Image (cartoon, rainbow, N blue to C red):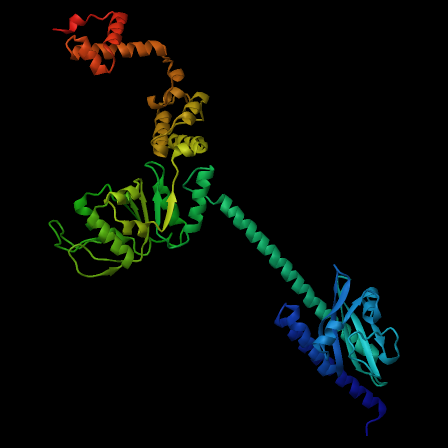
Length: 519
């Protein structure tokens, strides 16, 4: 037979094994999720199974209202759980929140401070109640309690120690949940900030401009570049539509694939079909071998169709089929060849008017106009004129191996006041000319083309006043009318739409001799 010490040692060993098993199971439960609502109930069930717990609760403190409520429970009905509400210092649970110390009640039936707000222990005797705090950084955020049958062979200190370990594990899970939510919130805020900054700062490297009109263009490019959408770039000649197409391709997932450019206005009508779709050997005179077209060359990448409004009606039909079916047929061939190509088109023509006049197919327009991008003319983005001018000065200084350090104030005045009908291309040509003409490392007003000059910059003021200019014009018109009527003042007056009397007065005023024009 085992003596008393051996029996005690055996019980102690079994209890330690039971505790380790419980703690291991709880650690696995806590690892399943950071959602507190998903893990607390399974933890209480595990404690009940291993510790012979009749009831168990986890209560949490609402810092805003100061109310303590049961968050999760074992052995309580939903109605009983809803009744479990306390204030700080109220009842055993309230005292644990207030003091931060564990409390053991050996028998709840004789403890006046045990309030039994839930009503689940009515008439119960010989039941012990143990409540330990749940702390995070010395702050009491909750409490873990347990009801169990109390007897002399069970140590309350052991139960308090075990529940304290479990509460520490729960507090760690709560801390991870809180940190995870804070980290997630911080990450979301950072992502929002970065996205806003990206929308604000996205600008293709090949484009210059900080005006609102250009920022709107950049925002459109940021949205459409990663997609597969067909883009129609619209704008006046010289605004930089090709730069937009380049930016779309090189900021897209197809950036590493082929990028093929086609100027539809530069290719003769007789060869443009072959250029776009290729031809078979012997398809026409001069077709000595099979040749791939631009669409096949761009397979997997992007094709840029500039001046799309110049296509003939026949080619418009064939292009429409390519866009719809994503396949081509070479000239002189019957084989259908699939192509994976993103299409970017550009035009400076008012296609709506072209459609109304029957020169452009409406169905093709809607196929191309999936995502329109309008590039504003330079006169609508005057704030970018000097940025562009500085860029072109630097560019052509390097190209011509010259040093040009600045643009004079008088030249700046001319550049910013001009209406730029040729847009960015005209500005670029002007600055290239000015760099070539500069001899003192400065672009002066007189280096700019005559079309930009003003009366002040060229010292060419008005030669006459407005009344003088009008008199000169009036005299010239009267002399021309008399010449046409061979000196007949009445006929000249009718031609000019004035009366004979006014004609006579003007003839006298200017000292004109009608007889001179009769011959």
